[in-house]
Image (cartoon, rainbow, N blue to C red):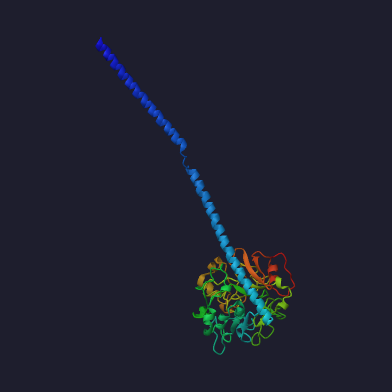
Amino acid sequence: MAGATVCRTTRRSLLFHKLSLVARTCESRMKGAAMTHVGHSSCRRGFTLLELLVAIAIIGILLSLLLVGIQYSREAMRRTVCQNNLRQIGIALSQYASRIRSYPPVVIWTRRGEPLGRGIVPIGVVDRFTVGIDTPADPDPIHANWVIMLLPFLEEGNLLEQFDVRLPVSHEKNAKARTQNLPVFRCPSDSFNRSDNLFLRGLQVGRTSNSYARGNYGINVGPDDDCVRPGDEEHPCPNGFFAPKDLLTENEQVWGSGLAGVNKSFGPHQVIDGLSQTVIVDELRAGVHALDPRGVWALGQVGSSATARHGRFGDAGRPNHTNSRGEEFMGCTALREAVGSGYLASQGMPCYQPFVREIEINAQAGARSMHPGGVNALMCDGSVHFIANEIDVEAWHALHTRDSQDLVEGVF
């Protein structure tokens, strides 16, 4: 009996021990489960793939908006610099006119008549040096232009001293001066106005040493028609340029309805339309190649430092026009052969190629810029305005005439 009692007691102890182990195990599992639950509830849930993609998209949009804003801000600063340059030029022109009683001519031309024009075109439009036919007996007739004359009033008197204005601008003695970068004539928006993008005058005939620095502003010669007044009975020219003498041998001056001509000047008192209603300087773009004469500050030619025939009569009807006939200058054929017409069109710098290279002339250039949507223009009163590309052609034409009595409203 005693043995049986001991066995029962032992079995009970073992059973109690097993039950205790089970209870402790369950308690431990419950605590683990509870801790696991608490851990899940206190930890943050991770991003799903969809949420991550949405976040990346939002960040991308914000970055693109920031980039656009930075680019817009930079262009706004560049445009402001460009406008300030024009204001400085306007002050210089006003000081020049106060002292000389007129604005400067577009260029000093030192020969009479132009036999190369075959009696059809006047002086000022044929560049003998470019085609390599200037001789010691008949040297390059292109001397100082309006920018060179304006240098003392732009605080560039030291640069003027480097020019020998008694000699053609192409003369080797003027080489250093004409290749100097002129900060006030550089618009920072124009990526082609660089010191390594010089114009090589005469390159198309093998001349490689006659180089010129770039500029971005041109004086207004006039938006007149492509003919010389008064014409004749067969070819009347009521809206053309003036060159009243014999074009072959006696022609000494050429001028239009703008503010400067070849050997011809006008004063503020002759601006009948009003100083605030008349453009005196347009923005220009620098040429895209060494063969491209556009945007050359020291060369007094249309396209280089002057605008002409842009308006109702010309192909360059508005600012930044895309008409392939809009720019007419000597060297267009060689330029198109070198870079291709497609490249010029893609750069917004087309030019007109005549059927015969020998009839190329410097005759037509409009206002251009690399500012989005328009160009800057300097008025005779010294004010500067940004003109939209979509301006009405008639209004654009009227802004470039000094005495048409066509007042323009609602443009500025």
